[in-house]
Image 1 (spheres, helix red, strand yellow):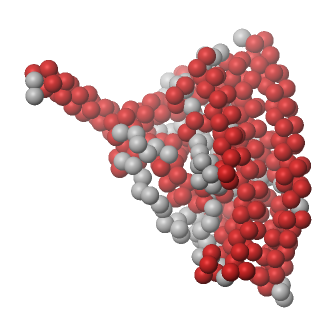
Image 2: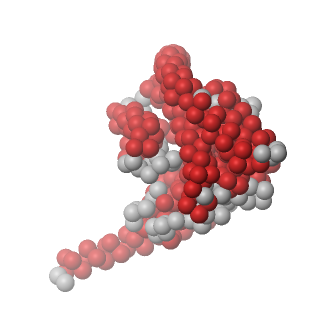
Image 3: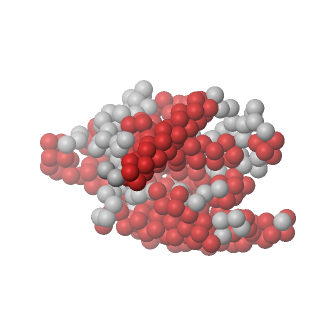
Amino acid sequence: MTASEQSSARNESTSSNLVESSFQAKFLTMKSWKPSNTPSNRDRLELYALHTQAVSGDAFANIQHNSSVADKAKFTAWRNKRGIPSVEAMRLYINECDRQTRVYGNNIGNSQSTSLKNSATTPMNTPNQSSMAASNGSSEYGSILTPRGLAAIPLLCAASSEHREAYIVRMTNTNASNGWWCKQEPLCADPGTYLAIPETVLLQLSTWIESLALSYAQQIKFVHSFICPIHRVFLALWVQIILVSTLFNSAFLSMKTLLYGAKSTGVSIRQIFDEEIVPCGRAARGLCEPHQAVTIRLTGLILLPLVCLCDVAAVVGSGVVGLPGGAVVFAASAVLTWWYWLMILPPIGFWLLFFSLWAGGCFSIIELAGS
């Protein structure tokens, strides 16, 4: 090894040691951090994923099937960081900690955190305690067969509840290569498959809009004011896609299990009810709760027929005909209402996007007038 190579290696080792020391110090600081405003679940998961990637490296292939919803959400966030070197993950963790302390403030911090107290609030948007208890394995329902879809809905709702002021602060402090949408992937089907096309189109369009804003107008607040309602509508549409995909997947799996048996599909009718149909109805019903964002509540109203289908199937399944009868009713209802899911919902989605453009224009004018 030449002298220059030895010097380069020493410098690299020194730099890595400095990053590791800063990382450990930042981790200890964050353990005692008392934010002025409660961080969103999405931001909590981002810190968890970066820290785990830095300490443990790439996530393993799969998570246990009987893991809780919270554990599955953590695992998905960690797996999205696959391939990031440990030192780079440490740097990203430090930067993310700095960003979150700026956005959410610090009760023992400086005056900057105080100024952000009212303008950068990102309220938590999680199910109530009874819903969480039913989701983390302490209820009568088991793990979810489609965890990456249904388990992500509370996180998407939390992201949709982000205040416009907090959204602007986050965007102005985010690099183009570190946007939120570019890190996402389809949740209801394997990326690259035909079933993942609706989610892929939505994610690519969202990523393109976010990338343009961060690349050419990162510090222009009225641009972010314009995009904020569009961002929320895209999140609501993603929730809609997840629930409708779960509907058809559950109906198909129910009929396949009835025709070919549980040994062929690997799941029983009881599992399908307890782990897909009932959680799907519960998730759709939760969208209408008062603490949800307006776009999410509108999505909940649109998906009320889905709640009815799940409830009727559950009632029939608990009756004389039993679970097989409930499964037949659920599958038949999904087929008979195909026109609503495939012909009515898409135009409603386009109208929501049109309204978000109008609302974004109003917000951007307000932002310009106040600057």
